[in-house]
Length: 358
Image 1 (spheres, rainbow, N blue to C red):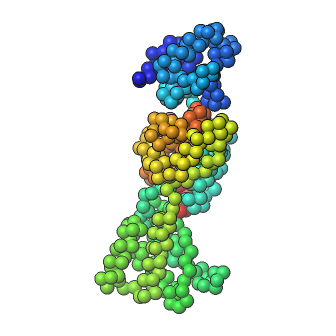
Image 2 (cartoon, rainbow, N blue to C red):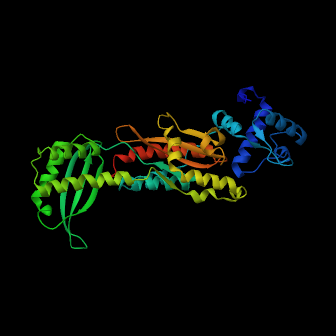
Image 3 (tube, one colour):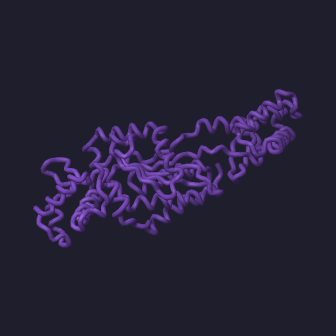
């Protein structure tokens, strides 16, 4: 049956429910009537507390894992607590400083995403997840800059791609001996891509370039054409090989409480291996105005593992959503601390993206 709104509970039932949930989230253990009766603010006997707990259990908000154990919140109970009773704790100055420091280092975008995933794991004590942006880059400028011989004595060039959103990508290409590495060929290839293919995605650029060359409309010589082909191909191949989802800190899921239910842990780790399914779940948070929380069996993917996901979208420098980041862990996550921390990390990563190279 559907759980009642928290406002329909008596004040006494709400207080006992809140303390059971907070106790469970603190140490992952069921909370007993004797424990609550020892708290001065409750002022009820263990028998009276058990009666209220039984009522809450009948409403589907609490459950008893064993006959002699205390009570713990159900997924429905956690949802009611999170939506209507949770007292959100703003990120501490220490957490704010760690997030700011980690995301202000600069460097490639993918490195920043990996650092963000690791940071989320460290701050939450669970596993951090970041979806890699899938929006295709549109070109603004392309340059091939000679670098000279590399370790194998082959000439090299630095291929620099500037996107319309201000992002910069750098790759090193090895050049064949001969005219391919000549400064004139490098300049011709650079000018061709910039002047003819600007404003297109990489896929559109490659298609347009090959169509023009096949039709004999290109004024490029053979050496320059080869550089154009390789300059575009290096990013096409890179995009195909990029991970859909970056996960860090999965080992955090193997704590003492989790090891008591090894099948649940195995199910969760299997879920994380299926990154496409996890990414599909995170996709549903792309259009969220605020951080989204998925609790246990509310989502089919984590119904068996009994896990929760806290996710928030992040944006590029123009305010467009390009990915989602979040935390996955047991349902006893410290929601009051993790929810605002995920939100702050998403906003901080969004501000940092305009300063990073890809």
